[in-house]
Length: 357
Image 1 (cartoon, one colour):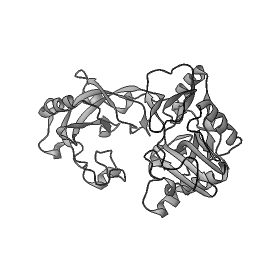
Image 2 (cartoon, one colour):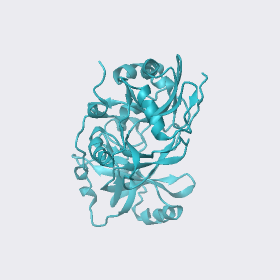
Image 3 (tube, one colour):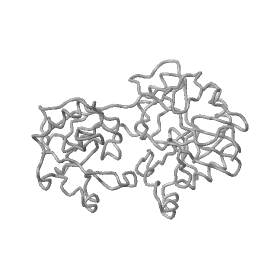
Image 4 (tube, one colour):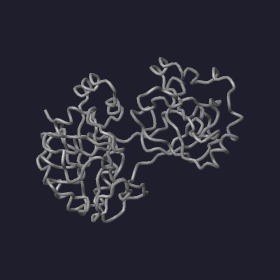
């Protein structure tokens, strides 16, 4: 492979802002695996956000990109999997598997798509220093008429359209909106763009915590919600605290600490088979590896309000929740899934078009 921009490339990033800024190019924020595609003739490589290759996990996508991208190019985009008209991150995560046979099976069962939104090189020319508007125009021409599973990400400079996308697209599993300055050069690993994400709040039960890697202070709070059967399900964590606050939380939560974990609703967390019928902390996964998943059980009596963007499959917080305040006025039993706001459904085909035959 001999391209003007060679792997590894760390993608340009975005910083969070509260509102959609004016005078920019706007795109949907995709909920998938960020990937930079390098194609040089028959050779195709998929680079991840960390620079590590994703190529072996998406064989069906490698073939499709070889057929649909310009012969020599470097394209920034997102790998996604859509099921029942919306993005499914769980299905996407399953693709990171050590067994090639499993990857091949999933490639046939839940094929991936690639949504292209930036062009870093074309033929023998690097476009890293080229303004965004020119890169977008070149990308649109290069992908004119492209069909699934490769897509050109919709983009607009109309702020009102971006606001409409922000409201509508969440129903298809998208994260929000990304705003990009029109004259922006491609800045690797820099937060030079802006992201506007959905935020909601929920009252949750704080049922335990993990220690911080630096020592005996709180690393993350373990959060739960009661399901329709009255079972406390683990739905995620809240982890963004100052070091001083982490130390305070240990003392604050000490009266709730259980000496005997057998009394806790999640007592079976270390039994791998128990995770098949309930959401418990410490579920083994290919992401955790040998990571210490032990935690400190607390009597599930304390309620906190947290902010979140959206739920994954209606079962857990997709990203780390953000602690807002304690809620002494709420009972733990009132913290149920019923309080969660669900976005209005929206078919992904309305954004990208129908899947190919």
